[in-house]
Image (cartoon, rainbow, N blue to C red; front, side, top):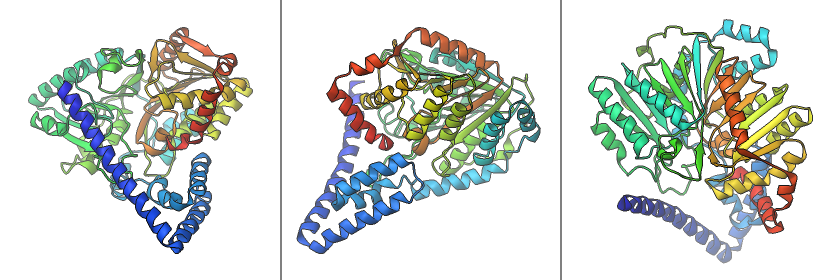
Length: 507
């Protein structure tokens, strides 16, 4: 184990050194050229001004644009060039092209559920607009004839996941951001190998950055040797242009096109508290059965068919038999390739349309001005807005940026709690106990703008009652943050919060 960790550390260090080395070389070239040739210095300054004008006229988030404008004007020598390399937030051309082609191919197999939408429209026009937005912009329809189960911990989800895997008969598809060797993954892997021997088609996608420090290099070959077809999403390369920003942050497991799991829980021991990291790890997930699983299957097939030469036909899947009707369910994905901020819009719509209460669990609260205003306006209107964040962070800088947002929100009536037992990784929003979200989308810029994400929107489902009960139980072991708590923070730390928040759009 010590050798393995040493190997992982050296691999990470080498990658970082190569990128920083290229960056330092580029800066040196620019510097020496500028002092040797005054015309080049003028060129870089003019380029920086042009870049500022260009950035101001883009449709990006205003906070993101402001940070880059400040940087470019502060360092005109290299600011404009830096933006050309790093600032466009554009998905690498090949990745964008392949993902979009695969997505377009799949759209013909997602069929509108007009009658279901009409039922929602009669019940609540605002909620109808939420579901209709997702169909018109993310192309995923809403379903009935689907059951939803909510799991308030990784331990609960893991136990049910094992039971469902044992029952698989035809296909098992896995797509995860993090996979780590340990009890959780080994238990799943043993079942997968057994299922391969039974003739089940087992395929897996994992993110290279997410697994950089948890799986040895070439691990996909081991899985292939075991009969598991495996692909790696966006492999890391020591390139200067940062193509590693766009990560597959989704957590999907789909069995026989009949059962699907998603939520915040990755395949690593800390998620089931088999291993302690940052105190007690609090997370949530959902399992869906029935017609809505097709949306999840489509998500996986989109990625698989652009990553692998061994493609899967959308026509290979039988139509599912309806199960007990348990409300309205819409699984969806969010992609940086389509220039539509689906996850952010879903979160904003839930908050803005809440009538009585908005209960949120999120590991990070690194939000834009628009999201702050949405939360504050809801609180000012009398909506009970509560947010639970970690007390023990996994990333110190992310926690400091989260804390930097406390004073303004609390002052305006938003209630913020810290989960005292440890780290909360859950990504849930519950509004008025009748509509809720559970998925992989954090309340931060990376999830909203850079990562591939997924989630499930639920309306009038029995699972929402379990979500409400879980929220109350979590509140009981959480501490309300007050303005007095914020004022007790020393001035240097508050100044550091302010500086970090300036750069939050880049985090």
